[in-house]
Amino acid sequence: MTGVLVLAGTPIGDVSDAPPRLLTELATADVIAAEDTRRLRRLTQALGVTPAGRVVSYFEGNEVGRTPELVEALLGGARVLLVTDAGMPSVSDPGYRLVAAAVEADVKVTAVPGPSAVLTALALSGLPVDRFTFEGFLPRKAGDRARQLASIAAEPRTMVFFEAPHRIAEALAAMAEAFGPERPAAVCRELTKTYEEVKRGPIGELAAWAAEGVKGEITVVVAGAPPAAPRELTPAELARLVAVREEAGERRKEAIAAVAVELSVPKREVFDAVVAAKKEASGEALKKG
View (cartoon, rainbow, N blue to C red):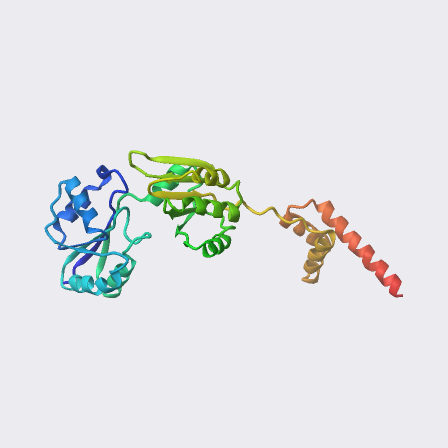
């Protein structure tokens, strides 16, 4: 029988947030693949857990080479526990390659839910959370960062970013440039830790605040773009929409009413546009005659 790959969420700050199942998995897994084995050791010591299985490193620099080894262990029946430094594996952390390889090998994959910086920051931000998108880390180069932000400037959903403390001021300034300085946002740092802080306000103000220096693990939440104001159509455009409906077989009265309802425009305004268009057409015909 094949084994099981377990993705386990680890505390993002406060160790006491560790779910009980995490302690059980740490104590019983055959193999523990950890992003940083030293941090894992500190976590298990804090939780009072002694891993019985083999502990191996699994991080960005070796995940390509180590994935086949872990899949082989899974196919041999091992229970492999994957943990990262904080939060859920695969969310801007190592894990995706191993999950994809396990699925390809028809190995069962399950998870131990745990703390998430993304959801915690969303909940604390005070911004809409009914729909959101996770954007991860922005590119380090200014040009690439500006292009990526420009590509999502019109995104209507709330956006969540991760950022390093030494780049947060530049990132917020770039966001203010791409989204406008008045776009609401929240900078959440050191979540669940002693010096937890959530700074809310327009991106421009947050960029100025961050310029003085910000420390700790940072998650940024930005409001989505506001709905674009509907463009006002000219009388000629209104008349053309009516004409299209007439050509399709609708009576003029019905076409005028339908256009008015569709565009939330007074019926009289559409009627006047049609009359004006007819007069203009008649005048043009007289000139040609």
